[in-house]
Image (tube, rainbow, N blue to C red; front, side, top):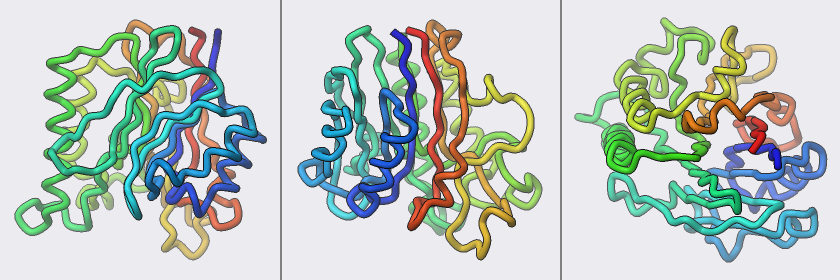
Length: 262
């Protein structure tokens, strides 16, 4: 059975419960992966989501920050989590569908403002997190897997509004791009979004600081959907719902979609 999957950094699932509901009503993905839920699992407002046809959820949460959740129309089994870099943060959860596909939902650390681990501990934590991802995928080569989430890195030149100006800005520095590429290569992950949309500027995040984010359009593609080679050819229909960035009291991220014929 084909299914459509979406990933979205919601920036507080409780504050933006109605926006999640709006997306579920209007777009109807079969599976929605959320990041930065900023809520303990027991306080995620799952009743409204269940009433909209999403009774199944696997999640990891903590009060006030981080947090990841997978909402699903179809049954999904909790497949655990990894605490990469030993941060003790709720940044990963995995769910297994009845067809055996495992969905990994990630919220990679943002990395702070300065791209120098000597003066910025958060940047070091980000690089360590990505290194642990690489090592884990190398030792546990995934099959029949989908990886989604806010990876907090825009890897390609066309994934940022100005490549040269962004080279020293956290999220597009060469060292981050290299670390993400190593993690991707270790799992042989296919970037489904860019395979479907190989050319042109493509963004999923626009800063709250921009007076008119839409007109300025200084975006970055921080949110990703990857798949293992054995199922990547089943993916199609990738898109980013840019309009969601303009909803009332929005997240600064827009949802990213892909459909899998599995």
